[in-house]
Image (cartoon, protein in one colour):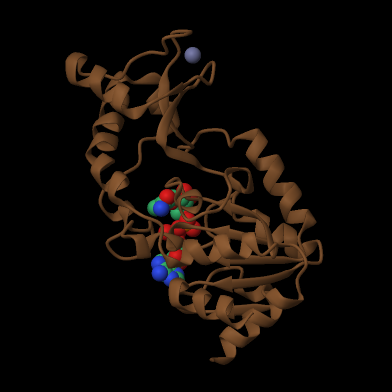
Length: 249
Ligand code: NAD
Ligand code: ZN
């Protein structure tokens, strides 16, 4: 066992109520590229901003086109061993909540109960009406798009339908933000897995936990701007490292 694995296992053993905070690095081992690594999504296409989505039908058309191009990828992706380890920590009672920036729903696929996952940036596997919140399924939107060349308006209220993700410029979801705040204030260990901790306000939650007296541990391939506040920083691959940690508990 390496010193890092032993140190992370010791923090988890000592904690009574941990919270896991994840970013795109959690899912690279499932084959989903992260944003900021070389070759990541940002280097290939600019995201559509929320204001453009609202005001410009062409932006909506481009968004749906891109989303449908990803459909096979999303459907083929599976939870990886890191996701399974996080689910084991939840099942053991070590971790109360998983706060995630990911939109891939792979924590739930890995076995974390729905009510313990807080999706700060939403979920790409379905869509919602921006006005009344009604859920719309992606295949139904695709069927409309294939006939009409654009996405449907909400069948209930005529509002604009969008994937249930939070785009740049879109207000953060109030319920999730409140739950994430409560979880961060209630934990005695905040474990960050695979986040550059560069996207705010999401990245404020590890700091909030630390300021409130929790230990902060960061497991990420590269350094992050919050390393200086952390009690433990491990620069390693998530899957094999967290598996070794869980086995050491
Ligand atoms: P990010 O891309 O900014 O950072 C990911 C971090 O994970 C990087 O520092 C990288 O070094 C590290 N990393 C990558 N693979 C790793 C591995 N196997 N082991 C250890 N570390 C690894 O991601 P972010 O902080 O989540 O912010 C990007 C934004 O993009 C988020 O807001 C998120 O909503 C969105 N996003 C989501 C997905 C997804 O749902 N899977 C994918 C891409 C982007
Ligand atoms: Zn509606």
